[in-house]
Image (cartoon, rainbow, N blue to C red; front, side):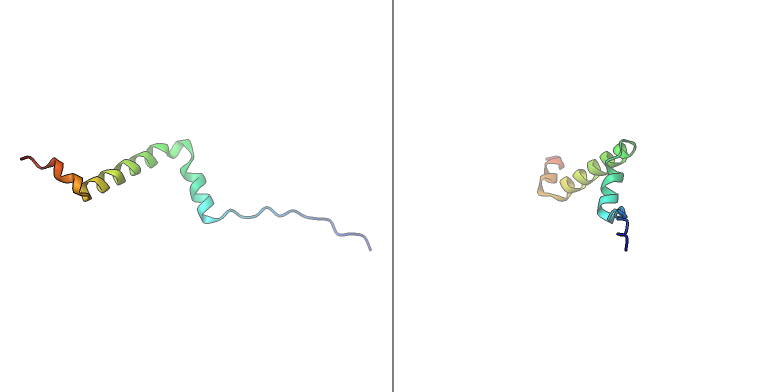
Length: 56
């Protein structure tokens, strides 16, 4: 009996890997930057450092 041919099946990418690949594309860089700046701004305003913005 002849040996069976080995077929390499490319594994499907996972959800996390697919999302990471999409986020790292250069065409999405401006969107990712905007979301990051927004997140930093919200974190700053939510922290106690936001009291520095209140005029005295």
